[in-house]
Amino acid sequence: MSAPPASKEATADRLADAVRQVSAVRGRGRRRSVTVAAGLFVALVAAFGVSLSVGDMVMPIGKVVETLLGGGDGGSQFVVLELRLPRALLAVLVGAAFGLSGGVFQTVLRNPLASPDLIGISAGASAVAVTAALVYQVSGLALSASALAGSVAAGTAIYVLAWRQGVAGQRLVLVGIGVGTGLSSVVWYVMARSDVTDAQEAFRWLAGSLNGRSWDQFWPMSGALALLVPLTAVAAHALRPLQLGDDAAAGLGTKVEPSRLALLGCATALAGVATAAAGPVGFVAFVAAPIARRLVPGRGAALPHAALSGALLVLVADFAAQHMLPSVQLPVGVVTSIIGAPYLLLLLARANRVGSGG
Image (cartoon, rainbow, N blue to C red; front, side):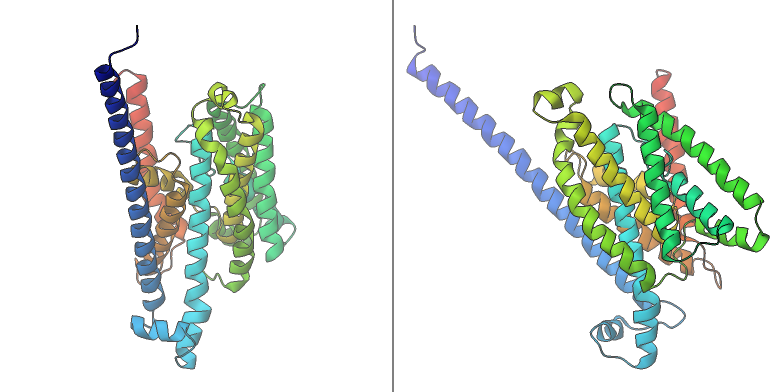
């Protein structure tokens, strides 16, 4: 017997109500996502303006804008356009690259510890760059290229060593930590065998620094991101199925291993170019993505928000590194480590409580 008309109408009403509720939830999520992204962008613009305005020569923001538009005297043009602007722009690009890289790693491997500075990617860049600089006296663009090559080589080695008919996130993280530890030993061995002055310069680079950066570092970085960001955006279409697990993703028609390899390759390259430009700035990739996910819960990887969070973090940290202590410019990595190290300890403490049943 067919259901009475009243029952059919009630069922249709319930389905329509459910559809409206789902649409309302999705609409709220999209509005929050856009609002948070706009807020991060406004904060980034404000921090950018302050970084161009404040320094040994403080300038009103109006004069900064006038200089950016081609006005101002020779002194303001030199300070803003040659000293402060490339450094601030590079801080934004480096932070965005690290944030995007960390977001991809943590989402693909489904592990909050899966960050390029913790699983050996940055260590690979550091090992090759320090060896090239201290042993072979490589400098300039060739040194940046060596850092990028080191990150790619380390990422490839970690992926191959972690492969067991596929790559599991936990296994890749453990292999990466082991590889990173070995590569760090190479760094300190090379530094111990080098001249003290050269080793000190390498140590400043290893801390992650934007001191003395200019347009020479900005243009290669911007060109690399102009290629890598679109590639990452295309590869990121596979993130949602991969978050459901390999079997579910395969059932939805996703080519699991090629998609995972493409995402990890993009993330490795992003971390490599950022490290090549500013050194291994610690903990930015580690904390930017969790900040983004907390700001927009339920939005998956939230990669645009992770990039904006990373850019804002590095820009603010570099401003603090320049002005926190009088007459001393700290490496930006020192400030980001002050932020990131407590978060790592908190994460490990929470994991320990969960593991012990607490």
